[in-house]
Length: 141
Image (tube, rainbow, N blue to C red; front, side, top):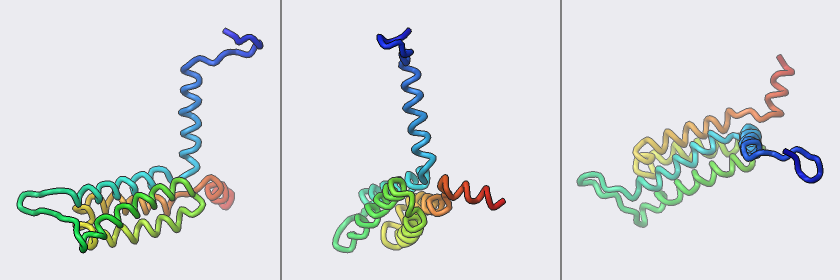
């Protein structure tokens, strides 16, 4: 099957796999999994502030401002680490610091789950080696 210009027409499956290939290429050039985990940890912390657990009612108030600011900061750091991979070490270290501080500031770090998600994301963002760093590491061997 060809187009009017003699160029082979692409089937739907070929264009769909090209889109998946393009996303895979984009994702490999960024600390995608680390940023995703950091953002998911922030989302989990945000919703942990809205919970009722048995007789324990968790409220946001003047003291609970941190319960809103810290999760938003973690989501923002996760998104920034994916969109600006050149600064991944800076964003990863900030993510780790905020995740550890959330243990005190946000309901025990989102009942520990959000802190662990964000902490793991921060570690992955710091440890990520971009394509240029990986090439330099291979040359040094």
